[in-house]
Amino acid sequence: MALHRMAPVDAAWFHMDGRANLAMVTSVALTREPLDFDRVAALYAARLADFPRFRQRVVERGLPIPLPHWEDVPDFDIGQHLHHVALPAPGGQQQLERLLGDLASTPLDRLQPLWQVHVIDNVDGGSALVTRFHHCIGDGTAMTAVSMRLYDTAPDAPLHREGPPPHDQVDHGDQGDQGDHGERGERGDERDEPWLEAALRTLAAPVRAAASAANTALDAVRHPQALVDKAAAVVGGAGMLLSELLKTDDPPSPFKGTFSLPKRVAWSAPVAIADVKAIGALADAKVNDVLVAGMTGALRAYLQRRGVDAAHTTLRALVPVDLRPRERALELGNDFGLVLLELAVARSTPLARLRATKAAMDALKRSLEPVAMRVLFDIFGRAPKAVSDIPEAMFSRKASVVMTNVVGAPGTLYVAGVPIERVMFWVPHPGDQLGMGISILSYRGQATLAIVADAHLVPDPDTITRGFEREFGALLAAARRAAGKTSAKAPPGSPASRSAPKDAAAGKVAATKPPANRTSATKTGARPAPAKKVAAKKVPAKKAPAKKAPAGKSPARKAAAKKAAPKRARRSAAGSGAPRG
Image 1 (cartoon, rainbow, N blue to C red):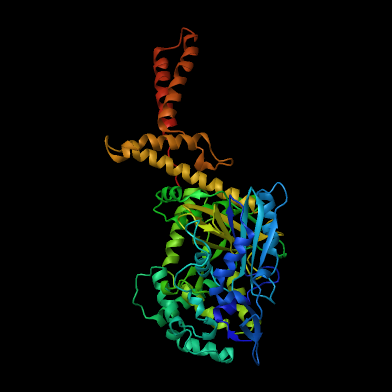
Image 2 (cartoon, rainbow, N blue to C red; image 1 turned 120 degrees about the vertical axis):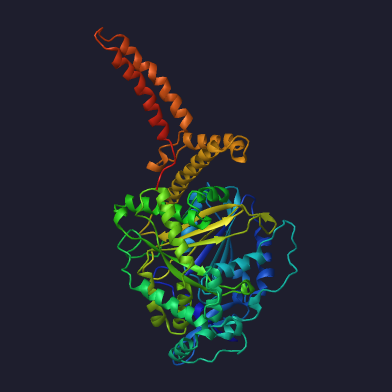
């Protein structure tokens, strides 16, 4: 049977399984109509045939130190990877969460290729298509390429589609230790050289080992010095990475502790990207900034609920940064770096958290840490697990959660002729330090927050997803009030003034339907005009007792009483503005 040396970065992820936390990605596509299992099976058999990885298992071979290799499975049977089950009655979200938690807790069979698909019937009258794969097969960008092959943009698409073959037909395992993506595939089967020699060779020649990664990272994070020497970029990123490793570890929290194998999953109601952009206008923030800020507010509320002084604690997330150039978008494998993001859980208001999140995210876009981390994976991925675990343990101690955001399809996709209603996924939180994975995926103009957590540490992740919904509602109410103020100040006949009734109506909805647990930022939902009108109605009520007062009351005091009401009305109107961070 043919053996193909696993690329070092992929090998690092293969070794990253913890004793309880698996480096496994789980995704689900929900449909309103039931899926036909036979049609789904035929679809996967026809379209995954282009990807050798899905017919290969992982074996460790070589002397003196066995290292991961891809091995073709003899007499591969795709039927062993496709499963058909049904939810028990009533077949709602609670039953689906329980089943998905069980699947997220179950290791993949290492005697087989590391992926599985479940078609689940009786899900609110429709179906759920659940996919699990090990991270060594590919990252989020790579699996998006697989989705492009499996899903269609029309319900009547043919089973066998015309189109360019995926790049995975050029087996990247054969390039083994080549860090330069441009040189992949040129050397045939990789010779099993000692990992230390390979590591030293990579460090001595960073232009070859990380040239493509460094150049891509400069584009991906929009670093202004696009022509910086690639070796200097790696060295600069290494210095920044070292400064991160010198930071204190994340303090104890509900997200750190002794892990158990069972997992819990949860997901939020979808939020409209148009609303996300409206919120972003409050602080000139991007879509990703707003979603991360909303998630941060939910984590702050959860920490407080669990007895943590959120105002005096630190909570960091490990965030992947895609380093894959566009010309390699259809390849499998892993090509990303990691950065540490300090979440603004200490800020007390939603708007303050949004501003702090934007500042932190802007700083990450200028960071070269992902390049250095990518090279670190390339070095230690050549070593056995005992050695490759060292940098992962060092880095993950500085954080408590993993967080990622993936942009999905803007329009409706179809699988086996059935439209997909919603798509979600759960990022792994591997190793022995990270207690929760947080994923945000956009699809059809809406974004959904999904959480997978250790069942012992976080038995109620749905509390966090509901907190995200409340935080988002508070930010959206503030955005609508701010838009209403802008419309009110616009000159007559301007576009802003013509949209004022619509904005005012939106603000009224926000005011009459506040979130259940409102913060101080959401207590002022009334518009200025109604507040003034209510205050005016109270003035006569205060005059009535004045008529019954003793005759000795002076006219001056009556005049003072008349002046007090307008002042109170003005104060009431002023108190209805947008919250300040």
